[in-house]
Length: 301
Image 1 (cartoon, rainbow, N blue to C red):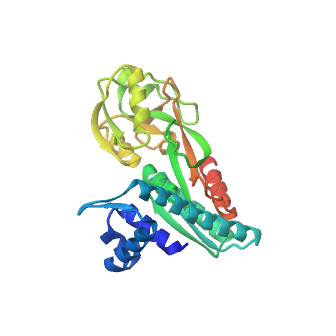
Image 2 (image 1 turned 90 degrees about the horizontal axis):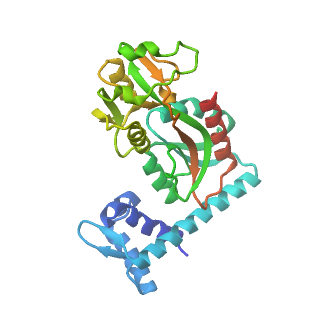
Image 3 (image 1 turned 180 degrees about the vertical axis):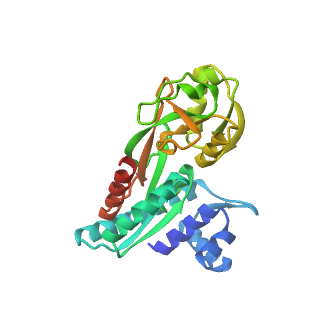
């Protein structure tokens, strides 16, 4: 079986266009189309439904793609196991992480990893959780570091690094901020219902944390007055510090008690998981295991 041909068909499916797939593969559209037509002739079925705006797999195409991805995953897993057996510290490792805490993690962990594996090529990718999950499932990302609520895992493998509490953040000048615990002491608990008439800035609806936040407000008996939605927890902090609103935010972003913000625990003490993820059929190589260890050590220090 021609492994290149497998990669060609997967790329057409990923791009949903033979034109874009050819560009990404550095082939002419005609050459790629000939490869596809030859394969379809050999199989006796069409693998894609063709329209001007979208190429989607047929039922036969879905079967082919599933097998193609598994074959390429087996190849990758086999090579990784042989490298581990030979104790070779060479190869490639693609890493995914979320914006914000992810890039901070990578810039701290990578130098330590590089000192242990100087000949290992690491490709960093700043991606949303859902994009990481899609690429891991497709076999195009080796490792993803992501934050998840219950029920958001795919069929791939996940390693829980730690659980993180979700907390309430108020502007320092807010009247209720006076009841915040002093620096160094456990957070005071505040009922979210006391802030039912206050404006909030929240993460955007497609983020993995938003469903949990909506459930927290629902449990408190009200729908928040949402001043602004964002994809950045740093933006939430800035708007709270500017005394524009309140926020519900992961502990990571307020653990050093940033100036101008008062933090409180919520009565239900909600948490989500910080995880490392890799493909369902993937082999976790020694370098990948070491990278995960360093990330966990960094985040739980």
